[in-house]
Length: 119
Length: 504
Image (tube, rainbow over all chains, first blue to last red; front, side, top):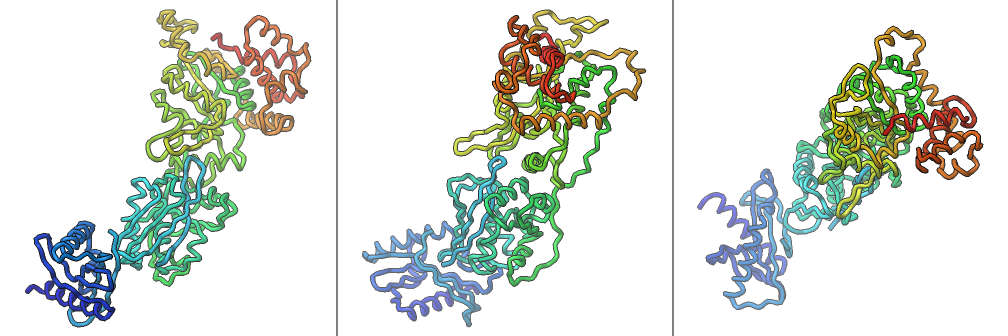
């Protein structure tokens, strides 16, 4: 496994723990279909959040959340719909979140959770 | 989350509007969204601001930032909003005290390294800010001298964004940078010309002084080489210095047109001589995007000289009719308009015919009568009717070269006479020109014996009613030049001659 993928896996674990600690149920992790991958699907009450996790070691090349481009975001929306269709879920509210982590694979420097992205 | 606010100025023509700039630092993916009718160069401001902030020791917030320029319906152009946008964002993130930023107006374009570039039109923008009640304005260091021409507002000149942040009380390290200078300009050459250069044409010098004293438009008709251009240039020399208000207006136009780097107040009336291939837009102003002042506005409070007037396109000459009448020009676009001053003294020059030799002793005109008629007919009509002083200019013979130079009037003396004549007119009429009816039948009505020649001309059909009023005005100007309290029959006679000197 490449170093960067390892960091990404670690970041997703950190994000999952963070969500659980904040009262979410993690329904799915690393769900794949032919359109792409959803990092985390989590439920909080009647809301389902599709969470994209981005991890970087430093901010030297920009904040991790800057890596989520409009094209990437558009794909997330499609993936969210696809997940709901496959799992026959009709949640009251569906939203897309992002979690940006700066850390080295052992300690977390910072973690930011952006809720309900619109674009 | 948090909102940062500040102000800047949007110019349309010479008038500026205060624009509120608010930056909302919201949750969301990192993005910078600019709304409020920006044009392309303002839309690109996003990328300049992002780089400049990063290179000034601050960080753009990694969230969604919405910048709104209000009033949202007012179109905004140019790069002068960069500084205000950057400071509104940094006030929103509390990198700089929001109160200080909010109470100041900002103008300036950002370079990617965080330095601040000078922009055009700072002078009218500072005037607009002051008139809108702003007490402090921050401008690029390169525009400092220009901004400081405006009294009644505190000007803070800054060389870089870091410098601006420090001025507002941010805790930031400011490194010394070289301020970006506006394109340098050599000192304007002082024209080495004098009224006494004019040889052997005392009538012309008198006509010139009359035109200068009364602000009358002139038409110079004569063969090539007779000195028409020379005369027009000397007309602007004998005009009095601009008063404070006019000087600010002329300097503002120059700043807006970027014809010159504005280091000091322009105190002499401008002289603008566009080439006869100029388009209507070049003369009256216009252009895509930013509306720029045309020659008639750049010559405002001075002289607009159209050499070879019949060669100008008819549409161009006709476009001048309205500004000549109203003293300003309004250029309309679909969603806004710009008003520029256009209070010019118009001087037209023309040859008598295409070959230039008609009516000249010892030369033969080779033009057919029809060509000659058509040549000057391009000028006739409404434009010529608005011109008070028609002067035939003839070639000077060798005998005049040895005239006594000491007896010729110098520019300095002529200007004194013009200033004295204008002072008399202002004493009598105030700053406004008199109403025609007031001259004809009001308290300034002249005795019948004085205006007998003019009445006769009107009866003969030699002058129109408009012409009648114009002759009266010229006669008053002539009286002022002579220091006479009211025009005499002699003044009326000379006025008639000036009005009709050219058999048009």
